Image: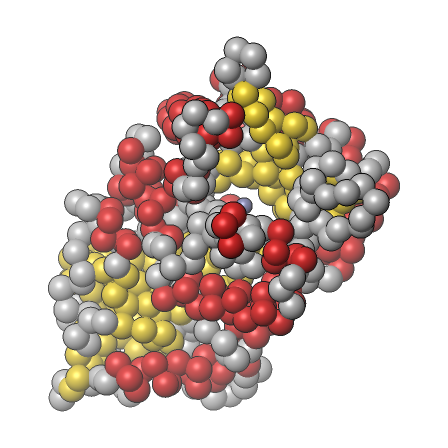
Length: 446
Ligand SMILES: [Zn+2]
């Protein structure tokens, strides 16, 4: 018999289910709970054409089978959840987030007040809200690329999520990030005053390797390195960005991280710093505002990922007639061209937004229309945020796909995201690890 499942009850159940599945995985003798999700349309994240009328059998936190609706009897005791006419997709993955940033506006003190005035507890409280916001919007996995002066705060948030204490996405964390003297905020204060820095600053390969070891020892899943810092326009109006680490410094970090079987993400805009990032063997270029043809060819050859973060550069641009404003417009102008060239050349591209650089109250999915504006098909953009992102994270087949063996991370949208990718801004159903986190769909089940 079908009956409506109260959304309120689902909300309350979330923490309990999550606890049952994440905090107590050792109780292997208890048979895992089974559930069948019925999808009118399924986009599985692999790039395959959508399939109509599918059922997804879930046991515990994993997908067990995907098949045409009605072709198998449901297992005894399994719950059926019919998502009506919605389109079901894998949980989305944002490969570039900052839960410890909130899109600070300069008028409210900007970046600096976070490090100078806010208690750590306040920053953690806001990060908890940001993590929940990611999950609410259907991002069931994030790679959070540094805490901006909040130390190892991301490690603790990840732990609390995994233990079911707070709602949030599956997190890959990179802790403090690494740059050099002169290579990160805070800056612009009297030289006599020691101010905190938003990243761990190193000089020389020995310090670089030590910083990587410390961060890995304290729970970093990825190492984040800033390979460029300030940017401005030169006399010819070309974008210039200040390089930070040398190739030798980066190589020490990459060597250390790779020997721990971890990877290195490099913030790099263009020029010397971006070239050093590639020559030093980084695994993903973050932003990549202005890639030369030779750099694109090197990325293809080395298998380097690009996480472009297009949308964030349209936020908070300085006034057009100011040096900062002209730089901001140049960034956007070259970024789109770089993305198009990289896409055509076959560079591996994963979805990333830099959310936190803009407020968590805004839709994270605003990145999708930008990716399409610059040449991706809606299916390619969805793949970038699902199966391709999972590949970047070393979780191919486990995340970003709706297939047997994958984690039961599912979302649903009311419309067709292939016709209007903006549908992904209105995710109506979110399941993570086989537990329904939220739904605004009229759910029917047994
Ligand atoms: Zn960032």
